[in-house]
Image (cartoon, rainbow, N blue to C red; front, side):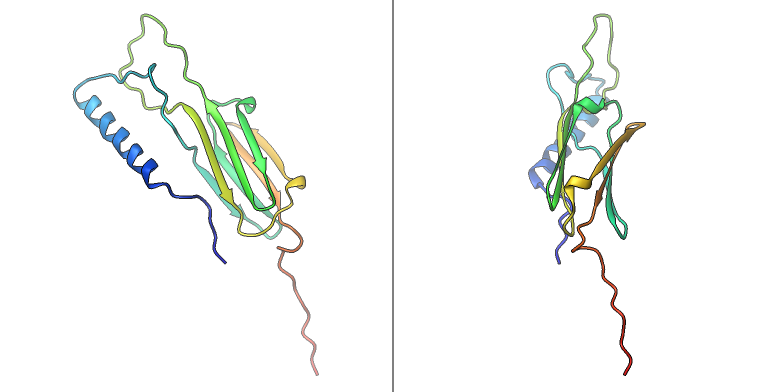
Length: 149
């Protein structure tokens, strides 16, 4: 049984590497990136846990309001999307370092077994989104008794 937690996109990795190299050069030469001109794509970190009855997904979303996050759930996958907006630039401010990522994000995970999306629950506390998704009865392990003859 194959488990697909995230899909790897090599081009996204190259873009991330280039942005990191640009950031290092900007830092070395004392340049401040033009943060108001572009927003960097970012992916919030997440954990996928499995218990006997549920899958539990925890996503780091610091600085976001619950209204900025959308959750889409099917029988076998979960998609979390949203946007972290950059603060408006104010006159008289000079940025010496800009490391926080802003912009739209989308994370999709495929569950290793079937779930019951109608019974899912989500909570958001201290920047951590926790989604608990019950496993389908078909996916739960069954125990059978051994008959002795």
